[in-house]
Length: 128
Length: 192
Image 1: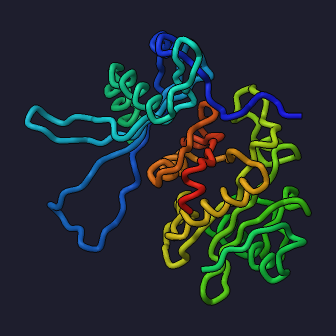
Image 2: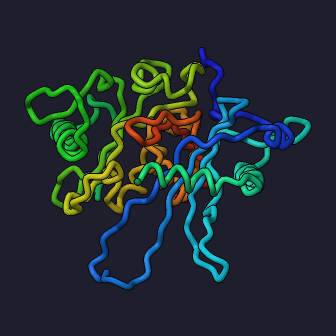
Image 3: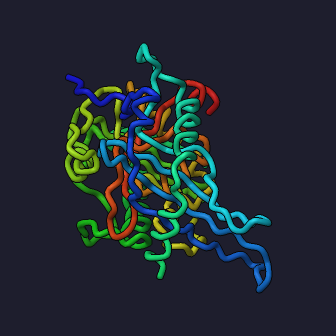
């Protein structure tokens, strides 16, 4: 007999997701890859990941990759790619969005969170 | 590169032997996994049963270059028996549509990396995973579940697979570990 887990997704409306309070879990740096032609002064990329859970619903997980980008105004930490999550957005009739659309919507939610400082602090502590 | 699939009773003995030796080379010797040692240079555990389904890649010289193990979740499987905490109290799947993927590796032994991701260092990794998905789909699977470090989940997604966490990670020695779902999409199936 089959038990309940089918696709492992938690089906939530956008309002449900907006009501979540996300808490930082862990962030990390990507491992540096040695290239044969590297030498002092060449450009490099600093990237990594950050993982969050919802403090008011501990079953929700969302994570994403990031990259450090230099700009005239300073260094920015930018989300790269769509978030990975166990949430699948549904409409008010509980019909699920396509998973790519769902991830894009979750990405918009994530972009409204001031996550960069938490990730930066966690990285500073982890790699001190 | 040839890919073979089947149970231990259906695969040639030399393929099964090569598979167990390859798994020892990758998971015990290279990655340092603390697995029960048999003392014969072969890696097998309690989930290697007569009904276990294997996918094995052999290179042009006949050496095993890739491995995957598939188990139905309607019988004992690795995540259900050893890592149920990855689902944070939710019941582990017991479902004919869900198969577990474990002992997945496609390794380029000329690559010196010992990182947890080196089990995917070979370019055949994507083909191996497609083969595993195809074999599982032939047996009724609609998705795979696997115990994965975060790096594997990131690699899967970058390679275009529909993969996502089933629950929040457990942080083990500073590294996130997930129960990961890989959807067997019909369009992906058809393309490979």
